[in-house]
Length: 487
Ligand code: FRU
Image 1 (cartoon, rainbow, N blue to C red):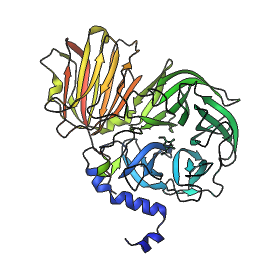
Image 2 (cartoon, protein in one colour; image 1 turned 30 degrees about the vertical axis):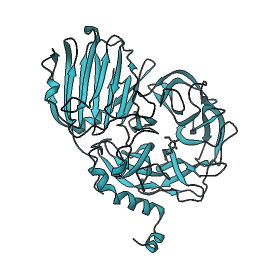
Image 3 (cartoon, rainbow, N blue to C red; image 1 turned 120 degrees about the vertical axis):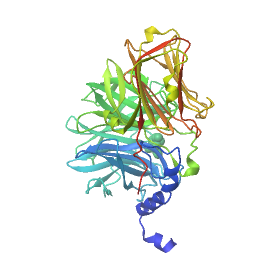
Image 4 (cartoon, helix red, strand yellow; image 1 turned 60 degrees about the vertical axis):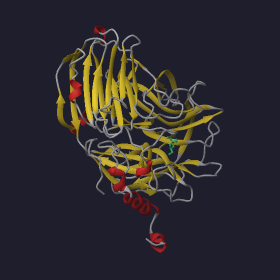
């Protein structure tokens, strides 16, 4: 293609062409997911603009379509009828306006039938480097037009700093509410705005802020009400040991302020950040995250892609504990039942030794009170037994620990997740997809999401324990491939 041709093309067309041109290499990579959302090629990070409209789910994501490294941000787009079969849509946003060099994270709303995106326009080297902007679609999400009134919020209030991004918008108390991430004097903050028309915004104040230990800058703040309980989700920068936390609290509808109660880690995996929530047309609160993290190893980069999203999770409360469960629609992925029933592991008769596969769903239940020491579950194990990824249940400490086979983040080491369950029967639900593992324990009270990069022959599974182990149920399915895009 010569330069003359390029001149006539829009930034969106050029981005689309670049992403498609490198797709065949990316999807041939054995690490490319069989059923999780990723871009056809290029780099992705946060999920953005989550919404269901007219029955169709839309998921957008931070995208750099020109290489497998972070760069000027675009919004990629997929859509689905069932949260399982995703179709790649044209790239939704490119940084093509004088007020932006990147289209950073944001959200989506249904504004009287018009799919509307609210995002942060990031402009390098400006004093107000982050402003809030709107783009609307008049063709059900095929294309988006940035409105002439942009930016609709031209800079931070005195309570914030130039790091002022990731608007999450929802409708409540008769108007639009927007929470934005920021921070001041090393204290992460969520700022709240209101509007009647999505264009004119009034600053209301600090919705909530760090207690001094919860990060210096809050990214991607998300608010939702789950089974009647108000929840704030935060992606904090520089919070020791944490990547994403949620707080149970109460939102005051007069002031918009959120009073923080108990806070907990959202997911114990190392590859997890930028969780976003939305309410679907059935009223369910659903969550997607980026299943990677800044400063992580991305061994897929030479193959032209990096980053994927988690599977969709539905949120519920159990007392003051947030439960995250894989959406039931994921049963559509099941291909073949490989194991089913109850069994007792006695050392020699490990039924998992018969399993093979790169994409499996595993669900089992057991009674912790019947155990003394615990067990080790080998996942994606090599025929030589190492390298291996291992889920360790320590009955004495009452913790679950996932040790991945591949190198982790700089300075990061896997942390044991404490199990606080009072349930007599404990359930463990595992989803494996080529280069990722997601584990949901105790009805989703504990989640562990982790990217793994096993070698080619690591397709085996095993279960070991020092004692006899009874599993009340143990089911395993192989899963279908639905996400290798044909563009
Ligand atoms: C979170 C984040 C957001 C920002 C985006 C840029 O991972 O840093 O704060 O909008 O990524 O890609």
